[in-house]
Length: 391
Image (cartoon, rainbow, N blue to C red; front, side):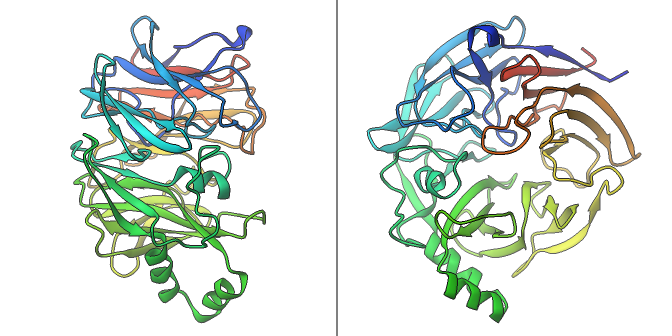
């Protein structure tokens, strides 16, 4: 018997009305675990066009009531409009479109407009003092399914533009700063690659982009994926590295290559899927240092995993994870200290299992780790479910 119970929060599949939360590594639940940010869609299994919109709303966990906030055409299948709470529930934000530019809109807890950011928001510092933004138009051009369609600032005529990269944003909309440009990141990368790999980059003339920015618990560093491909050519997970950098733009480090689903455990350590294992690394200079492998008997394939509770921990204990990229997906609870694992629930009907239109569970826990939001195709369309400990 699972220590968590599952309850469906959103409905509408027979009427063609589906729902999802944005992503697994942002705050989609407020700190009280009483409200979840959700977006509502009306089609499936095709790439969004610039005119395709979703409705963003707040779902009340107690009764499933939907409070409509607004419409946006800045969204993707895998990460939605990055709708997330700021400061535990005092404010929230989601990305939007202003003509051919992407922006972010910030609201107070009641849904009133509070600020407009000049760039899309990707990650929010734990103390809500700032956010990080990435170029979602370039991301869409180079990794469809994650960026936003139709933006005018992809800079695709430049393989590694110096005027684009990771932006530090004030959440009142008053300021922005480019703290790590693509050009500087690529120069750093090439300086730390073996000669053979440097020559490959020179010959193939890759285009580079950033994705998956995440801020350390103390807000002093961030990690980001630097990836590359030839436009229109093949891409796989080995064509990228994870960097870490100070949030003031200094002290860039090469965490590791070919990483996936990177998360901060604390201010000094991160864990991620790499080379057939869920690895724990120290954020050391100039390269990360591997410290061990997590749950090797259980985790043999890439997963979305969050430690519980999701704040900084000295060592891993309880974790929630899914088993993605297959038609039947399990939601698991694992305790690394005693080695015990239980299946919270099994979700069938996840077709397609792979590709840009797949539906991952993306388990997103509450602040105390006692509630978990997921999105599943269990009833035939994307809908949001809540797992509650002891519920």
